[in-house]
Length: 228
Ligand code: DC
Picture 1 (cartoon, helix red, strand yellow):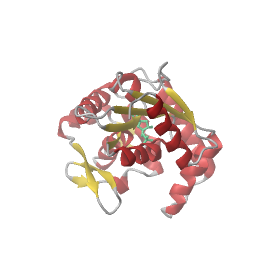
Picture 2 (tube, rainbow, N blue to C red):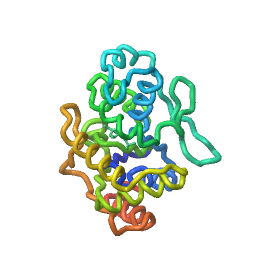
Picture 3 (cartoon, rainbow, N blue to C red):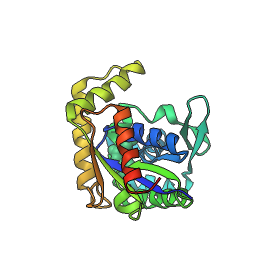
Picture 4 (cartoon, protein in one colour):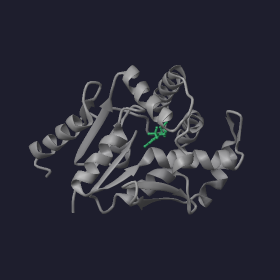
């Protein structure tokens, strides 16, 4: 049946990179829960619920029942992509604009309850790697392996800057650092399911670790715990 692997941590610490590698290696499904909050945020932007930085919370809450989020596998990219009401919005949700607005959406209890219910449903069959901020603490408190990721701020920001540059986007390092600091604070201080390190989480600081070294470390941990 497989196990549940929960990966949490600060923004841009390489959670999704590790999660994808693990899922590939184990033949598990990978669910990027950040993409779900980004999708809701993108819906709010495209429906005009944001005026500048100000969100019309009531309009978004009223629209929640009409928001359908699913993941579909893209064989060309060898990864799953997020769909909102049948439309592939993978490319729309990774912008700095959405990164700057998404915490206003992800802190709303109504939004979180809907996303958590969807995530629990997706994880019912196990054999899943899910990453986010509250996966080990709230979505799957009984996950067989919980990983909490952290890394030095400069390293995190450089990694994110490279991603933007590869897409041809002109973003400054300082803007990225400001955004990461802001989101970390928001994630740790919201009232509903904040980002916390659970006592049973395996702490992974990847400041000086390659992707391969991180994967090896976790595979080793799974062996040690006799989970594979
Ligand atoms: O991982 P990410 O940067 O794509 O996540 C986008 C935002 O969603 C991030 O600012 C925090 C929030 N988030 C959350 O509150 N809970 C999750 N399980 C996943 C993401």
